[in-house]
Length: 302
Image (cartoon, rainbow, N blue to C red):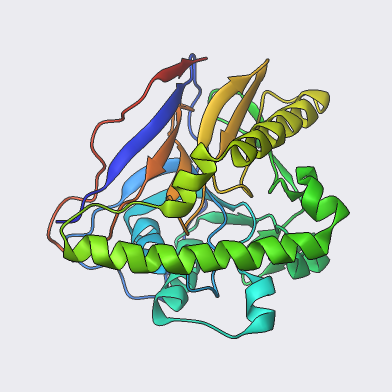
C-alpha cells in the first residue's frame, strides 16, 4: 500500500502576511491530471538534487509529487539534471520525461519556476540571467516568505571543499556514490518483495559514519555563516542529500534533501510556515488521497 507522510520538522511563522497573487494562467498544453489525484496547495516548493539522467533518480515518485502538489513558486535548487553522468553514459527514462512534463505543466498553469544550477548541472550556469522554456535561471535568489523571512536560496556546492579544491576527487566520489545507490536499489527490490518498507543504505551510512557526519556538520556551519554575513534570516540549500531544518546560531538553516535517497522537499504555506515533506511512493491513480498525514517532529518557533 502506498504511503505518503510529512516528516522531520516544521517552522511556524508568527504574524504571517497574505500569499502573493498568482499570475493569470494560460491554457495548459498538457492533459489535465486524472480525477482522483487531488493537489495540495503551497505558496512555495523547494526541490533539489533530483539527478535526472541517472539510474538513482526516483523519477516516478518525483513526478507523482509534482502532480499532487501545486504552488505559486517552484524553486529547483540545483543538480536537477546530472550532466556528470550524462557525459559518461546516456540514460533517460519515460518517468524522467514525465518529471519534465510536470514542470512545464506548472509553468502553463501560472507557476513561477526558478532554477539555480548546482555542480552536476553547472553547464546551465552559462544561461544565468535568461529564461529557458519559461524557467528563470539564476545563480542565487532571495526569497521572502509570507511571514517576512528573507531566505538566501543557493545550491551550496561552493561550500564543499572537495569540489572547490579537488574536482577530480569529487568525480571519484560521485562514482562511488552511484555504485552505492545501485546496490541500494537491489536491496530495495528485495525489501519490497519481502513486504518491508523502503530503507536507504547511503542515508544510513551518512548518519553513522563519523567522517560523513563531520562533513555534513562543517557544511551546514559554513552555509549558515555565509547567510549570516549576507544579513538574511535563513538559507535554503541542497547538495549534501540531507534534509534538515534547524537554527544554527541566529540563522534558520533549511536543506530540502534529494530525490535519489530520501525523496524530500521543502514547502511553505500561505502563512509562511515551512516544513519538509517526505514522499514515500506514488499512489495508483484514484486509490487514496494524496494528502500527507499529520506532521511528525518538533516545531521550530519563529
